[in-house]
Image 1 (cartoon, rainbow, N blue to C red):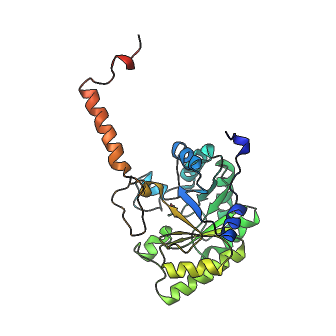
Image 2 (image 1 turned 45 degrees about the vertical axis):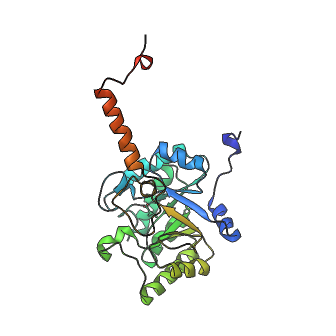
Image 3 (image 1 turned 135 degrees about the vertical axis):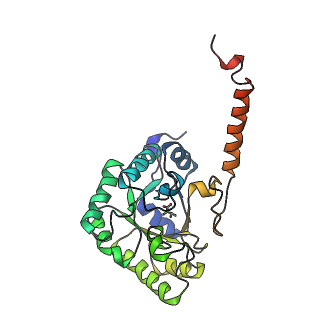
Length: 272
Ligand code: KIV
């Protein structure tokens, strides 16, 4: 049986080696201690404390409202659970765009207060100054291109990005820019599979896709989507591994029935 000390942690360097030997990287979101414990013990390579917490944990329509304090709360809960996976935490909207000093302060708060391993932020050339400043403090940065949900009001829809040649060219340039700056990996969200393949082949850092096809270096999904807790969200790229909404609801319904019928608690479920 392995003990805590024997567990070999996943690092940014591990991910680079995985890309080099063609081993795919598994990444999933988590936002709390209990679920992160299960994800870590399942052997996930990377856990993303995504700002999708704004949607699936807090019920907001977009990722924009979640605050830095709230991200730190989620991240600290996840970190307490994790023994092996690399934990990356999203910098939320409004904490890094336009002011690289504020970006660094935000990243430092995540690293210090949550004890996170790395941070992720959305965008390419427009945030490169923030990326550089965070990296200069020794904080590893994961980029995020393609569909960038924090810019939803700029784009107007959640449809596939970079189908047009001009946008695809910009995306490829941005991917190279992020690699040159020193990012250790890149998330590519909802772009044509052919373009994602081209990006993954053009840069040496791992490209982790979501709705970006199979020719990238790894895959990421939002936990609540792949477990079937969110029912209404059904994009083409999503594979559901469970139907937890119905399973959990069924458990709640059985519990209600047992309480009402006085079947619960029975004699063996009480104290003498
Ligand atoms: O916040 C999130 O969950 C993400 C993934 C969709 C990559 O950024």
